[in-house]
Length: 165
Image (cartoon, rainbow, N blue to C red):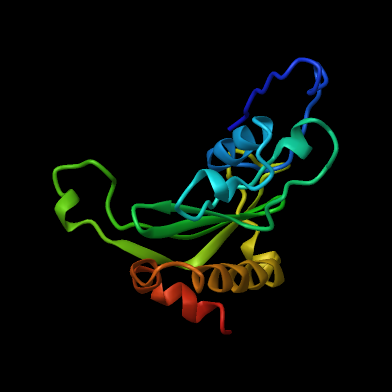
């Protein structure tokens, strides 16, 4: 989803970036705008987001993220690495239905890979032709998950195993 930022005198009017960022980046960025150099000072909890102010003001052209993980509850469903988005799991039945008590997050037998620069609608799965990209992102996912609390690691144990292939 696009984002719009306005910061007169700092963000050039009409500037555009296709780099990936997330709402988790807003707090660390706001802390940086307020003049705090270390955002961890403002929170007693670890921050997943990154300061994207250098990206917004044009000082950096690349996102500070190597990998963005997207969870639904405690279950990882997709990951974004650069232009690539990999779907690794989904709910076995639609969300918010009468049967949602039986809902389970299940791994996708064949993960789906999309190039977000040319296919924002995620209509053309490229995984079969880009297995090296799929395996690379799976390894990055496993590495990132190892830094999460035990509850998250347990809920995503199968993804930790995939990263060891």
